[in-house]
Length: 144
Image (tube, rainbow, N blue to C red):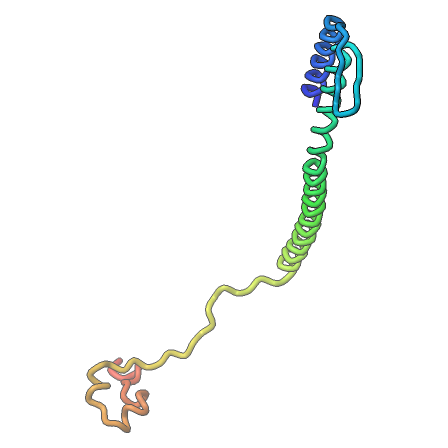
């Protein structure tokens, strides 16, 4: 912003120096309108009118940009509120997790199914296949 201001001041100083050096009278005619004045005054008027027209033509784009920035700022504020709510929920869940008793990591005892070998399955009849527990030797058999 300061760079633009400094550039504007330098241009203004240059225009004043130009105006002081060009004081010759000129006549400007536009359709039915005629104007007589110094060359510097006519040129400064033309530069000012050009700056005004450029400002008016660029103002819709500047206004659109300002609106977009405003919408983005409000969107950022909404997202920050959502983030804060989520962080609060996370903290609440963490405190609830700390308060709960810890779960026992040891697996529950599962009744073992008796091992039925492949040979027994292949040689078994249909009735015996329906109940594989009868085919399996008990664990106590064969032990002294």
